[in-house]
Amino acid sequence: MWIWVKQVIIYLLVLSMVGCNSQAMFNTKDDSIDQSDVGPATSSKIEASIVEEQPINRGRKLDVIIPIFDSGLDDEVIGETVWAELRRSEATIFANQLKATLDATGQFAAVRVTPDATATGELYIQGRIEQSTGHDVEISLSVSSITGEDVIARSAAGSFSFAKLINRDGRTIKSFEHTVDKNYFTNLRNDKQQAYQPVFDQASDFVVSLLKKYSEAEKAELGNLSDLRFAASFSEDAFSEYMVIEKGETHLVGMPSMDDPMYQKVRALRVRDQLFIDNLQNEYQGFNQQINESYLLWQEQSLEEHVLKKEAKARSTKKILGGIALIGLAILSASSNSGSNSVGDNAAATATVAAGVAAVGLISSGIHDRKEAAMHNETIKELGQSVDIEMSPQVVAFEEREKELVGDSAEQFQQWRSFLKTIYELEKTPDVQL
Image (cartoon, rainbow, N blue to C red; front, side, top):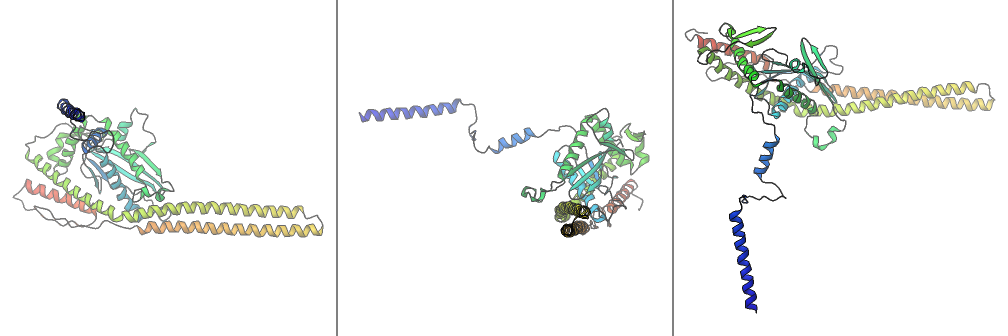
């Protein structure tokens, strides 16, 4: 009996093994990697999902230039709610923050922060700080192409989606604003995070939306025009024939041959120019890293001081108004009891004095709160004045020739351009000593 049972068990085991092998033979699905519906997915699955989620821009991508922001400084407000040192620092911080946000979209070729708008690119985003108090921030942007065209006006034409546009100095301006939540810095998730990031997210989304109006042919023309505009900065006579200016905008009418020696020279110089500006990005990032801790501290404490100042003002107003009301009641009480008996007169007098004392106490306390609010305002000023970090001058060495560049970033950038001009003239006339 037991022998028969053992034979049946062995027979079933053999059948199960054969079944498993046959399933493996005829299963077309690769089960070499865990395909379970539960637990962490494999790296290949995660990478595939990331690729599917991200928008794919297979078209030509444009180079973007972001000059250091206009600080928005006004002689009438300096020292009241705005401090020159802080705003000049923010002009660089904001440009870097917008660059980082645009880079993260993956919709642009290269986004570069530059000292001014004379650098070569295809789109130019010029920003201005309208307000920055630690709790409220507002920036405004204009966007131009290398042609000189007002890109916002171009995109807004016939569209109802572009709201709150203004015109400043002949350029269409779009503003973005954000108010930092009073509890922002108490949330551990926001540690070391830029409190103003939402305003840069808004601006970035807006700029990306402007690209939808450009065809691939138009993008290619912008690329060619940026090359020729750069070339014309070295030799206008040689390259101006390929461009025409109509209504303040520059357009292509032709292109030089790729074999043109002069065109080849300026293209090589542009590569070197881009490398110089790319190195300049390291300087700006270094500046951001250097100032970041102090700046975040300024934002946090300014927000806290703003909340305390607001609360102190509210307490002050409430107490002073309450004191005035008590004085009024005391006077009314004294008047209404002026004709009563001596006992009533004494009681009224006592009530009047008590009300007066209480009123004076409330008003005094209210004035104290006003002084407290003023103290918080002074604290904000001191915090703003403490952020005074300027970009240091730098000495740059170059491969074929060496030149010392001194001064701030804007001065060095101009010296660099002058150096490129010298190289171009030297290569054009190698027998002439410059």
